Image (tube, rainbow, N blue to C red):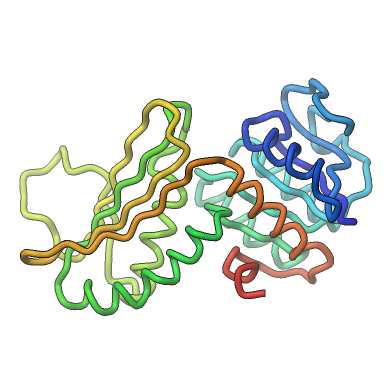
Length: 252
């Protein structure tokens, strides 16, 4: 059985993962880390990851950007593979995650959903056919009113999939309110909606003359992300140092 430390255990995603892991015989949450140290499950909860001395095979992180530096230091020091699911990281933090992967196994994903990661792969041939033919690319993402970062990490990852297929020729536009000019054909517009209890919705539109092709993913429950995180934990435990993504999990 895989033993996991859950960073951000008392957050919304942490609770969902704990519930699913409690019924999964292949994984056990042996410790949690959260600013809220209340114990809702049978494992101990630490306010600071540096204080956690429980042996584990992997760390699952659904926390906050302010926790990333300490998380990566801990993972490298203890040589425990880590799955980083927290979004909104700064460039410096992204570089730190990459650097850590030279010393320990790191799986970084903006979205743990099998469907989203499949969509990322589908977008590449779609972009080569449609964007290359002059179709404009627009992305609209929708989330609940408590989400802190915008645009979502998933929206950026979807844009990256298109841009990768087009050899990095596109720039990203997050706001057009400060300009009065025609749309640049080499931009990907990314718009964010925040409201209510929307779990997550991402829509990629290829807009051509007299036709629009839309690829869309809708999350109806957080359990899809929790299941993906648990599957990633099974995959990453025991892996050598390196930088992994959910694409590796999907292909395994």
